[in-house]
Image 1 (spheres, rainbow, N blue to C red):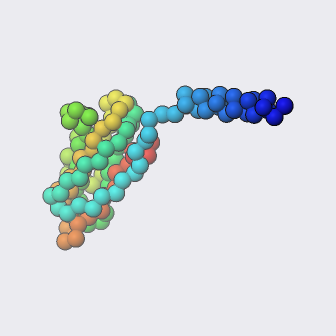
Image 2 (cartoon, one colour):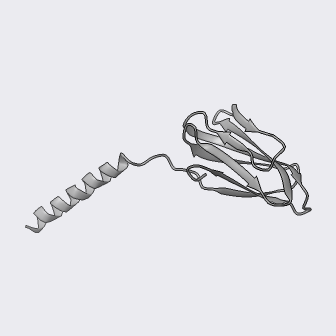
Image 3 (cartoon, helix red, strand yellow):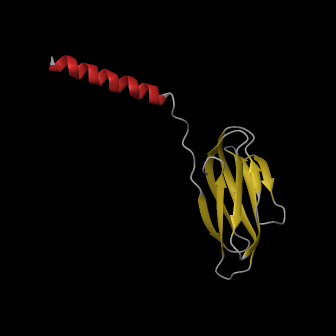
Length: 122
């Protein structure tokens, strides 16, 4: 009797595990924060869905921050290098990308803080 119960429980757990596996999507990146001095660059990697919006913003000592989106092969697919402190990119397809953040303008001698995010939690 105990063996039958145990077999039923193991089968139930196994079935539930396989059902969950079908629902698992690629790991999403987390929101990121970076500290950059004027003229510095940082690159972060994340997984984005097709059409997903990627944004950045910087603190009060920054008047310009730029973003560049590259494929895994290093091909530039989107950029926002306008003179502003809130750049916006859009992933052209689902996959892993590198996001390059540059700080053209930071007035604080110790640098500026920038945060990078996306619709699904980069």
